[in-house]
Image (cartoon, rainbow, N blue to C red):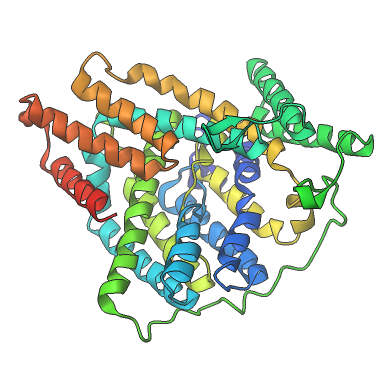
Amino acid sequence: MLEKVFKLKQNNTTLRTEIMAGLTTFMTMAYILIVNPSILGASGMDAGAVLTATAVASFLGTACMALFANYPFALAPGMGLNAYFAYTVVIQNGYTWQTALAAVFVEGLIFILLSLVNVREAIFNAIPKNLKSATSVGIGLFIAFIGLQNAGIIVGNDSTLVALGNVKTVGVALALIGTLITIALVVRKVRGALLWGILITWLLGIVCQLTGIYVVNPDAGVFSLIPEKIFSLPPSIGPVFFKMDFHGIHILDFAIVVFSFLFVDLFDTLGTLIGVSEKAGYLDKDGKLPRIKGALMADAVGTTAGAVLGTSTVTTFVESASGVTDGGRTGLTSIVTGLLFLVALVFTPVITVIPSFATAPALIVVGLFMLENVTKIEFADYTEGFPAFMTILMMIVAYSISTGLVFGVLSYVLLKLLSGRVKELNPVIVIIGILFFIKLLVG
């Protein structure tokens, strides 16, 4: 049955590989179960209920990806979008979280419509091949940068914005050791190398805690690596379930909020699909992604369902690249990841003690793997090379996939115009460029 549904042999993969890849993807993105309730809780939402909503929405969105498109991509409430939901829409602009959920719900419905009429597919196909390769590279470096930050290897700094963290701290040291171990496992062609890297790094941390090298200090953000218990009952979803509120909404203001959600989600998702698909070898010779309609529909349905359940916009996660790197090639990888989100509701005490320094090595190594696509970019042609360069650079320094695409597409369109190569522009990419320019002006 699994062969019939997911076509494992056709995709040159096995049941064991898919399961290991699904585990790896889950381990690298399980942090969302902790972070999302914390962020949305700032808006007044019940954090426990949001935890359950996050897990269920992640399962539904990821299962849709598996069944609609048979791709190993995982979905969950997106970082950045949840912060915009809580800190901008609710806290700064004064809307209730129930109204913000209504905006996310409307966004999801619009995405379903756009996916049905192939608008999102047309945008994906219009992005030039060099920019698609650059997006893959940019996302890889972006993922690596997130890993470095999560481990404390790179920290914030007032004078230089970022700086090297204290390598003498146990967490940083273990992250660096774990990265070397993970690379060694990859070189030795160990199946599930990224997952084993996470588990070995966590185990080393537990050893350090038991021997007194790693000293627990919650006030300093240093938490125990040993779970106090194995099981727990999941919190009730009742306080946030089906709580969208459409009353007393000013239509124009509401439309702006919906558009902001739409814009960031659309191009974050497209960027992620491009980057991870490029790494997995899914894109055809024209740079198109087969079955993209199903992939985009999964994202749209996940967002709509997520709003009903009580969480912010659900989107495709860049951490899916970790599972792809570990050999995941079909929707079975996604099914494993999605089911683990449900299982995590019972094993929350265990999942929540896995430290960020243990998952960081996997993210850093994925960045290395995705960097391989840089060789596909035609840097010798500056009208192609400079937009690719801007895409990669802005994703990292602006800490945003969508911002990288904005600067990449804008520079691509403008350089083609200024260099007299207008015929190389297709109408869709020009329209996208105009919309990006307007978005930069209005903020």
